[in-house]
Length: 498
Ligand code: AHR
Image 1 (tube, rainbow, N blue to C red):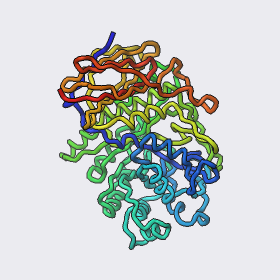
Image 2: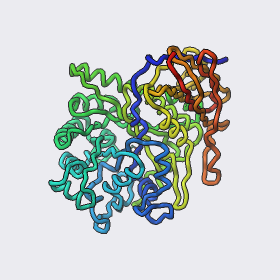
Image 3: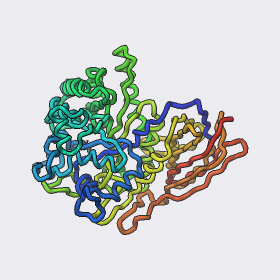
Image 4: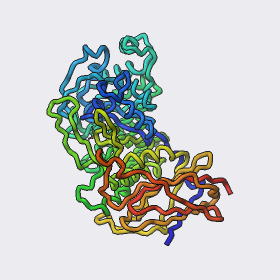
């Protein structure tokens, strides 16, 4: 039986911020070295940047790239990573027990961003450093020449300011694993002081305060509340992080992960409303979901003090890809709350692409990310699931088999992003458009299979890939499509108003 979903172009939650498709590059394992930067690879350009990696990143259309961490940032001295490479010190990296050569630093990152058609989202060290260092980095990046650090940037080959717009005030400062982690009250003061100075130097920047590191933390939401109450006027976003797992090896349960992701966003929406009410404020603070992904199979986090060790090189399968699509759909559905989100991470380390010196492998999660980043445009339309069948998702109870989001662009392109959680049954759907009608199918792309554990590998790089599908339009302008079992479908149709 076909389930019918109804859409109305006025029934929406606002515009989707393209920055929800951003990425995250950390000095961790082989993300920077041997990932984006590998001078001795035949696939690199004259800067040492991997051309194939840049091409793959461009396909995912990431407006922002968070850098340089992550846990790494909390013991990092950015001054080690500027100036002549021969003078840069090699340091032990506290976070990942690795050796940091500092060959790749702020200037290389900015340069790489230009090549990868993305913009920097810089994180400052509020763990072992503080306000003055954060302000100096901002001066280095954003101020016109004429002061010490801005002049250093010019000396290092870049007279024009980089103009980095979004800045993270530390990383996961509630985590006992974090260098310099502190209770919320102390972090709030650090963040406030850094914010005042940074916005004082460049009032055009936007700031992200650390929220707690995840829902599993005892500090969840309370760390965020304390920080937000103290820094309400100073910050524009609070960060949320989540890594999904199927450690129980229960696919039915795992595929309902979208319900949890949405709950996290709802938690933050409630918190933002609460603090806004408390402050009698009209200001809005938004969510920066700046670390999200699946991560549980490879937990190798000890670099044994070597350069570019193989750490957390997760291999992704079909069920992981379906979970990643649900993250992005949740961000789209809550476009009113989530304005920034960063896939953690982009290459080799919990990433959609893996590299060797001579090659690049596209993993399953790459496909929904590429399709959604390419086609989600305009308003996020509300969807009602009234008619859709449910299934038993273990401890998550009775859950809809469908996870979905919809966007309507100004040119009338309607894009639908659909995950069928059923492992056995295809899902026929009809989308009834109330005040507009479909006039033509622009494209249907699906990723699906019969084995949730199927994955691309170096031996079999095309085990999973996107296949073209079909959709039809009824006389009354409704759209009909069938989402394959264990499948993700991205459907685009042309529409016009009735
Ligand atoms: O992305 C890997 C790590 O996960 C990040 O460094 C940290 O912020 C999080 O705990």
